[in-house]
Image (cartoon, rainbow, N blue to C red; front, side, top):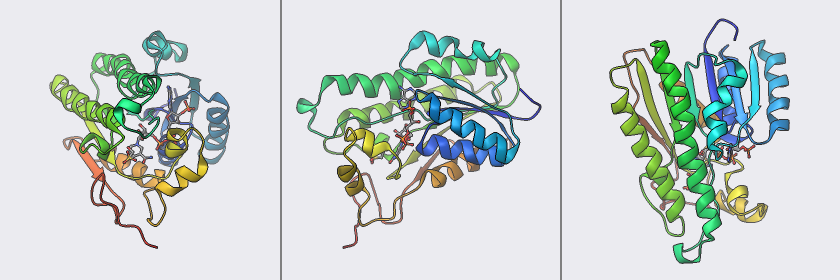
Length: 254
Ligand code: NDP
Ligand code: 8X3
């Protein structure tokens, strides 16, 4: 990679991951972008290189594939990664636990928990070997602090992200590696469209009557943690829309 700092973002093809890519590019960082939808990463890469003159590389990576997560950095020649943003994630379905489709459980646990673990293992090993300051930012959720009805498995997966963040922070405490868990509430992205299998009207209803957070709002929180002075470790940030008070308390107008 060119001189300068490098951020690796999983799930950079939309929403919060894409917003992080834009923000870090604006700040002059080199980018390593991954997701399953390569055509989106390619378009984003062209745009960011053109606009900001930064170095951007992209690679299709499905974080559910263990071997791919263990080896994907080799395809880029094992570049040094200063910041890893573990953002790839999803919710599938919204129904009582006993009525859930077990395939959706696999999808959420494999992506949100196991995929995050595999990518973290690969990247943090390199960070430790380099011995230079580095940072892991996990995108958790308010759902990892408070469960809500019909979302048990998604909430459990984000509770896992919370404790994996805390545990990793302990396990790298002797290294100059910071670990931050970002826990947003309602953010209007493709998240609900994915949760409701493409049903746009159901997805829109989630954000009706409230001004939700945007991907950019979450990217700003990530940037706050990453740009803090080196001796400051922002352990977690919980950010909510003004009219959201908890995972389940939302005031909607109209
Ligand atoms: P989006 O659906 O807009 O983005 C999700 C991203 O994750 C996409 O880039 C998608 O890329 C990627 N992704 C999903 N599955 C995989 C996979 N198996 N392998 C690689 N990449 C994958 O939603 P958000 O931006 O909202 O979600 C980003 C993160 O934020 C998630 O972890 C989510 O749980 C979390 N979050 C979201 C909130 C919200 O209200 N929106 C609130 C709190 C947390 P592709 O499909 O191309 O693979
Ligand atoms: C996404 C936020 O509350 O829709 O993590 O589950 S919520």
